[in-house]
Length: 259
Length: 265
Image (cartoon, rainbow over all chains, first blue to last red; front, side, top):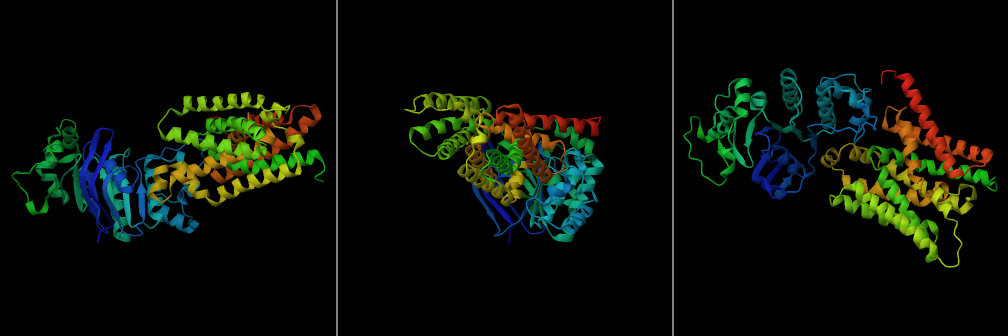
């Protein structure tokens, strides 16, 4: 039983092949994180799953699936006055008690009357999450939800996602450019670079050669990751269809190779 | 009471405001000012065709305005630059309309009535058309309010929530064409989009929620219609332009109010 499933999902932007025959599925209650460098097709994958971008291949959704989408950012036209309360009632209306409870739940209580445009980055992310959760989704889809937050804010946001999953059983599919901050929160990590390089449990992926080829070795700590993320090469991404004959220093049955 | 031309004129202005208030807010939020302009300019071509084929004027303008709105939407979907493309379509349609009217046989057409409106000659059946069209637009916007607002805010958020943003765009497009058709008699083709944009922009400065802005836009439109007609009577100025001048003055007032209230902004 999967909530959402894509088979041979292929996305092109003009002549550029962004996603090449990606297979992905999310089960109820599961937290799946997609990691990959810039330009690896993470956002395109989410958009294709949401039906926001034209794609080839097959996307299957459970009948009546309710998706809670939290975009990277919200471009608000300054001519539109929009208090938090109005935003949370789009597209369905909720009672003011429900709205108040949800704002409390996501850690920004009592800001119903504040203008969306006046919120800080962290507050806006939590309000976007609150709007998604008010629809009682089966699955939350988050696109780099912590962009622009500092490390404390980031950690806090992912803790909140974990808590929400524990309380409501909602499945979560999210994108991150940074594996180690979402490590503890994820059940499964998918390493993407145009195609799925590898996937599995976070600590397994972290040590997988395909992941290291993308993000470098020594992924201990933010600084190491940061440095390697800026000088890695993309070998892993462009030999699609190859066999992986790597020497594994981890339990191989936990790493699923795609390609 | 309806025998008095002034009462009919006020009723026409008030009725039209019911549509231009909410629709104008969406036009401003969606940055469709030029779209409204182009659609309105095309209405002149509609007038010419209606006269040539002996159709009711509002039907002719509605058909051409719809065709124009469709053409612009199609052009924008093709990824053409909306700015220059809109200019070509807008002035192309206006000039073609002006030329076509000169070919209308045996009719001495008062062109300024269509360019600037002729609200003081509104008849009972005009009132019916204006209130019918404006009421329909207002009702559709009220009915689809949250879908329209969400699509305006973010097409992606709308689509992810199962709202088709293209359909909501189409609703706005058709509503603009309808408002153009029924407002020709009131403010004329050249000033229709002023009636959409100025009250909504004035309303923005005193509103803190979308609903407030719509209500304020309707109130500004009413005030502008009343004041404009009164001034037109007292000063013997053209009615349509006087209404727009009144709206522009209210805009200046609300800007001043906003500046006084928030001196730092």
